[in-house]
Length: 139
Image (cartoon, rainbow, N blue to C red; front, side, top):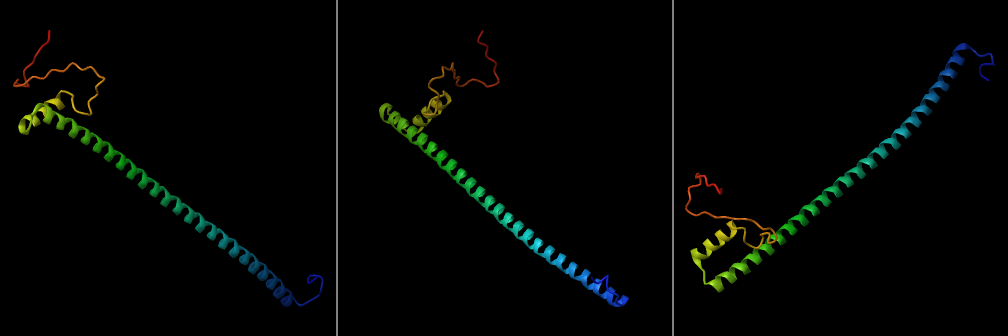
């Protein structure tokens, strides 16, 4: 309608400038709202990722703790079994002090002890008092 009326040029330019300014203001308001939504969404995503990281760390902590407790239980079971076994050796064979320590030492070297694999058939020889650099041939 404005272009069909015969108005002074300055008035027409001012009206067109005002309309353009209003469009720019509307566009900027919509851009502002869109950016608010974009930033709010980005913040929510960051918070969710932070929670995922925290939960992952908590899970890793529990995994480490459970593995540690399991390892401790296994070690405790072996130690208790060896205490019982060597206590029986002490009682039944009458070994004590250095004799018992030597028995435990040679038992361990020979593949004995609680943790030894009883199902494996190992050919084992122990040479006492032999120079380690000496070569011994079995042929």
